[in-house]
Length: 192
Image (cartoon, rainbow, N blue to C red; front, side, top):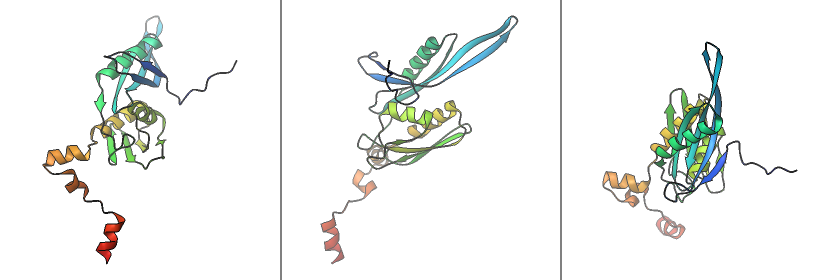
């Protein structure tokens, strides 16, 4: 009786709700919490879930309940209510390097050339897989708490901007911001 190999540590499910949008959700962490009462301890479960459509939209949510499936369901619903859109370059990486902070957690997200893959650990990997980014390098600094890491990643992703949006905000053309790209033939003429 062979098991199917699972991808990563997170739990992944496809959904066809919310107007036909297809979201995948990954369970980042689950934690058993106890409340001490007169008769002993009452146990509950806290779940952290990341949801995305793999096309540039991603959200996170936390849920707490007496049973694990109910906690995951609550976290998934909260994640779908907090979706953000992240601009991506060529649909595979970030436009620029960015840092994000939340509490004691800090993350550095760097764009990467094609073929690099997702170089990130644990909670950050779940965020990028659900977001749909294929090439990125991420480093977590400070807190290793999954909640702080995910929130710091979202703080960084909200600071990402595409050249088109920056140009529109500044009243310039995209080519003015990025500069003209010279072809090798044009450089040879300029050097002569």
